[in-house]
Amino acid sequence: MREQPTRADRRPLPPLDPPPLPGPAPLYQGWYDVLFAHWAVPPERVAPLLPEHTRPDVLDGTTYVGLVAFRVPFTTAAGIPVGGFGEVNVRLYSVDGYGRRGVVFLSMDADSAHNVLAARAVAGVPYMWSDVSLRAGGGGVRAGAVRRRLPPGGARGRWRTTVGERVERESPLERFVTARWGLHTRHAGRTWWIRVAHPRWPLFRAHSWAYEGDLLRAAGVRVDDPEPVSVLWSPGVDTGVCPSLLPAPRPGPPLLQRGL
Image (cartoon, rainbow, N blue to C red; front, top):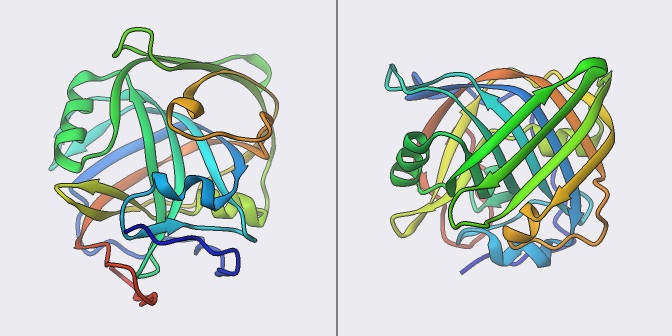
């Protein structure tokens, strides 16, 4: 059973820094040249899309859907290099009964077939083999495009924006959508929590956003306003990824335990 959202659910903002991982991360990646675009959505609209035993995380009664595009120049799994790729994902924001706040990926397009297959098999995350193009131009221009290979004629999108001023102090919304230290995923009949740790994002606001495509709709999300409420860019961070030994608990009072 999925927990139902409540507009009275008021929580402090996520911490700016992650809790330390319990040991060496089995997976390391670089997340570089990262573009974050976000749209506001009612939590009750997206609650059915979340894994069991999680609910939408909200900021002042609203939750958000994100379109995030970036380069992964390297990946090491258990110390073994497995290559890099471009990625574009559609994500929501979640919280479970332990109070662990994270993201839920609705779709993850990547242009590396072997990484797509491995991630789907090991963690159950919804990677799909796609053509991904990410480009940097003069004057801070960032542009990209994605076309899903399977099924033929699948979802696609393209975008363009211009990087502007550095964010010296994040707004509550900017912190809510970027200070995320884990993800929830459904795999092998259970909802699991996977932790991530990295330095704080160096963030810049982006302007002159232009987008066309059906990536959000293909992920099952309808937005009321086609204009995003926030567009950010970051040069990126190096990231460690570590599964938790505890699955998400069944619905009940939040335990708010730390270090899980």
